[in-house]
Image 1 (cartoon, rainbow, N blue to C red):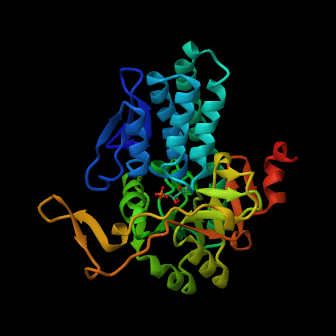
Image 2 (image 1 turned 90 degrees about the vertical axis):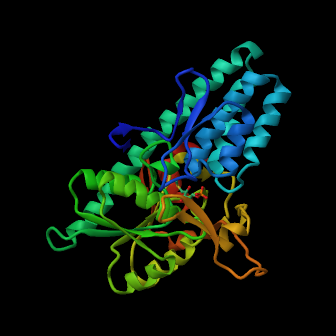
Length: 364
Ligand code: MRU
């Protein structure tokens, strides 16, 4: 996607051909800054501190993190330790483990002298695959938006509600949940997006609103609690969210608050779609209740960060001193509440049979 007319991915190799550049998402929407990663420790920090975030992007960053690790120590022990360190940074999104394990498995059979080049080649493939995959999700999902538009009066905008940030900032490009929105918008389908603010870190208010605005997509930021009322009033035609891990049975783990939106959608007859790339499916896990839920620090709940009138960035406390706060970062939406999954291969039921209809090679 473009920022001020310049095409960007969210992760790329620097001009030196080996260090890795990212957009520092902790500075958005107020400042657009890039950061150069040169070591395994810097890559791990970027994932853990959420300079990069979003399931597919942390996967790609993990893959490049292993490249940086291999430059310093390409022994079996060194690579295994590096992989474990990267995977431990964030537990919920399966893309991270998938990408790191994938690169590691390709390196270990090679002689040490060939491992660095092979790591960079595979990391580039993972990044390129994510771009093509997300574009495919966009094409399939745009058809659902178009179909919703045909049920409305001519020229009326389709109202889509989304949660968190599952846009191009969360992937290498295009996004998952936002890819159908970009493809539909680019095709001239009138649409408007309700953007859940997504407390506590506000990925909706700060990141989704920023990228939709840069692309010219009409949108309105709402408090997380507003979605139910909007659905009751008929002001949401469909919901599209992303996912950090979808189980083989079709349960969907995504940013905290997703489950409540799915419940409200079910109660109001609003279709609830989940967009995901193949790398987000955990074929080894059947039940959503087994997904490890990341617990983040209480300061994300007790404090807010934003722009001040003089152009600075400030962090303020919103809770009384001494009040405890808990911060589970993800929840699980049972498959029964999901209307359909949107993947790069098409749209399917949120069930094992549905997923296998698109990924038959996974049938055992
Ligand atoms: O904690 P985050 O910001 O990494 O969480 C991101 C999400 O939950 C996204 O919705 C998700 O990764 C889904 S698809 C890009």
